[in-house]
Length: 195
Image (cartoon, rainbow, N blue to C red):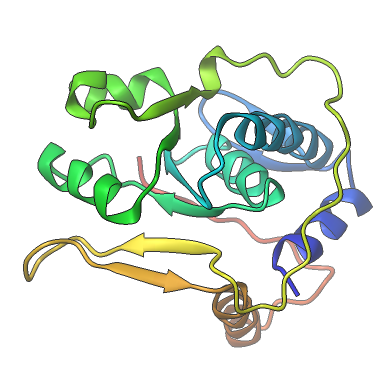
């Protein structure tokens, strides 16, 4: 089963609960769901490629893009904006992505669109309208072995290498973390990420 399904069920159970707060905004579960649907609609419309790049800051925009990309039945290729432009271009070519979900500050950080391979389609979340409710879509069904994410190493021993992760890999990691920390359903969990 896809990791997307239990996440969506959890969000639907408490749509008004604030689940993400960053330096620019707060996201309720409902706002994250609607935003992810907007992203899914845009990704589905803009690319037929089975993988989509995501280069976003550590903020509520990343889970929004991740869920939206999964909802569009695509695997996510996170791009680390701290890598060199040469490594970013290599990862884009190696992963075969033709679309990147990003925001203007990330593009500015890497030196603008010119730092990216020519022909790469950009979906800029900060240029999208998230007004209204997009068309509802049924989340895709998977058996847990399909590609969910293609993570690239930092390339300390040469070129960055892609590590293919299936939903089952991610689910096992989440379950192991919950078990190790002793987290119960009634507990809250605070994740603090660096800038």
